[in-house]
Length: 314
Image (cartoon, rainbow, N blue to C red):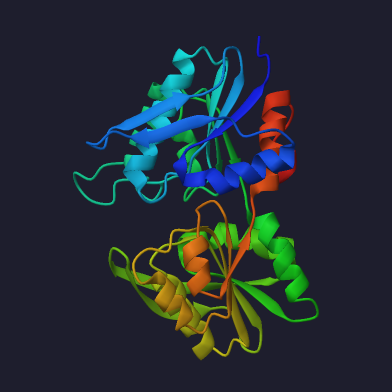
């Protein structure tokens, strides 16, 4: 029998976890997560979790491998402390792009991560905007997959009221996501046709759809190096788009991403706080952060009460 609800956070998501617990009106659980001098992860929970329904908030963002190991050790510690159920709340699921074999003798690392999270003792997973929805099938435990689109759609609708708007997928793989978003905001759909010459580099070929004189909204699940996003924005500018903004759930923002965005024709990028961006937002005024704390807080509450989660986005 579960006697209560506890929420803990790894080092990657402390501000988000604090926002979630504030939304839910409960305190954030006390845990010490550190490292020994040789880099080994050290975890110690400072309060009783016996019989509790426990949620561990941890995005596996940079430093990816350290954060994954933190999550695994925390799950193991909770199971050994007799927690009734442990849910891994992963706002950003690292390694999600490695979800299939793209070459001979290549790994499917997204499946490997799913296996080790399950092996560590997680009873279920809660995540947002997986790079590919079928990653849910890599787990042999329940996965609740949430979408940040409705959060950003509200801002897009209000800022484009009375303007002709078109939602643009930066590649063919994101068409389904862009179509659903376009339907939600009442906009048309366009697609960028691009070809990738090597990892993290892309060449935009042309724009499929009418964007001339319209406000264009580029939609993607993440922005990493921002190469694809910026080249797509340049293609839209050449195609006659009036204003260009972007919506990207996960702000990975590695390498020269911030400089590329600052120098691009993109006027604003809506991102969420699945990955901390405080320092990068300070040097990139184009970033507008939308919080997923209410979404996650409501989902955690519903999971704990054993009621429908799908009602949050259906």
